[in-house]
Length: 302
Image (cartoon, rainbow, N blue to C red):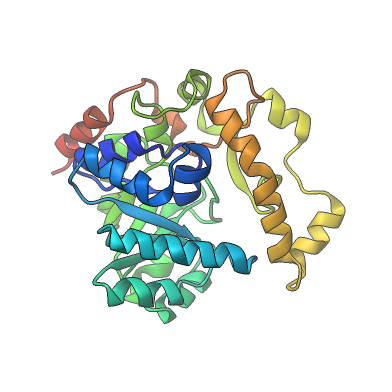
């Protein structure tokens, strides 16, 4: 949910009966909070549990040390649910579990799930091809089938924007759902009205994958900006992204270069339209309060 997970949105999701996830780079860099102060501010808005996302791509020692500090602060402030992504979560799993916490790891394929199981995580978040952010190559059915024998609860992420979507993936056998794009189109999210309107107007076919944000495909809404920039990395970048010694550095360069662009696009209606979203846009046609969205989901379940 970078850069859209502002504290008020995180708190509203938890207050409504789900669990809002704090993204530390978003909290500090985009929304201007010192990390501990930001967590305490969220606590003034809800006493319900919140979680934290730890993106652990192993490209920068300095960044990983910062993430370790954020995890320690989150534990000190009472957070006990963590979502890890883009790296091997063994170190964070040990730290969190020693404090009585739980770690779920984002996976797009079985090979990454096996590394997560080896790292001792408590559950898996299965990111399918309909997801925003970094989508996987498989549809929800095939992805669950590939993970079902690993003995961990599996949460579905991708393409879930309506109560019917939630019910459908739970009937497939998933233990829960993770939703992102649906919560951008809410009053509690501080993203620009232009971004929210683009979600309401988009269909699944308007979602394209761009390699120009992090070096690996990211789901974005097709706009004039995306058409002008293109979605493919250049020939040199492609070579570097395939090489085991350089791929992490190139991904880090792409990511840090793009973070400012993504945050400006999300918050400033006059900025270039570089908007992340998943294919759940298909079912999102109204800006609705978080509480209404969650209540409608609860009422649709058996």
